[in-house]
Image 1 (cartoon, rainbow, N blue to C red):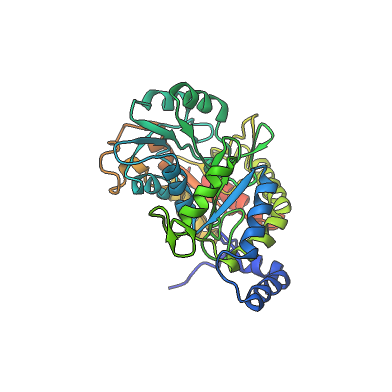
Image 2: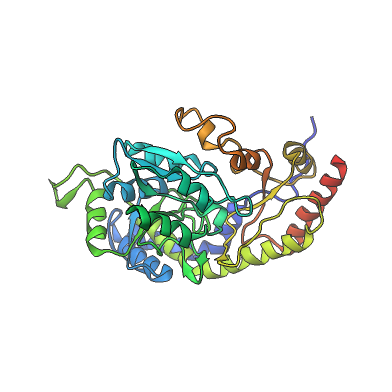
Length: 373
């Protein structure tokens, strides 16, 4: 059986490693020579540098983005009997983090222009049991934060930013994740700021909250072997922190390149018969993903595969239809999310892509759409 040569892969982590190899080797050697691997100087330096880069008062490194969300909600007192409003179209880990607190994830339908939660939909599902709002800056495009914060303020609840896909994105000139005083980041390897393993952070503007979160991530310890509260084990290790410091220094150039690639896609795919991302006036997106839409998505995906183009779907099953959340909704409850889930397709986008590769993908999309009739 013959296989189609890969013209453009969906991602290329080997290219990232090759570009940074000298810096990576130096960072790894530095950590190994230090003999310090957990909660040491690399993690402390990364937290300071991350907070400064994103305009937050502080950053607390944790093991992954899911823990970042859960710990943020835990610090707000979210627990059994509470509700947290979020998006039905995102990685399931957002809602799983809610569920792990004992609270119930409640979904709100989407703005079809951005696929972020629509403020008017959020307003409709807030109840007396709602403890927090947890909108997602999906695909690296900021959600419209001001009307959502107004809803939160009106109900006396907190808006937590899920910025796991949007490090470096800006809303009205301010870095997302740091605007409301409590935001979660993920450093999964494919993220815009990715580790070489798992990692996450909580952006915080309250020193007392930062101190509580640092204690909570480390088993609730105030001193060695003195556990004041029943905390968890969620620590960003020194090796990942050292490697993330490298990435953080390169993040501005990586972000600029992603935006260049997105702009080239938008030019090359204009009039190609696919729905394209719509960056809103309030937003400076960072294009963690470049997502197009087509009513025959699966056929388009297959046609692109035949042309050697790697694609993925983020995300094919809305969360209210996932078996993990059996009481969160039924088919038809969130029509925008369900419609999008059947049409969305993520094209390759990463800083190491060349303009020639972008044009190859765009040409394949145009040819594939034409072949579908």
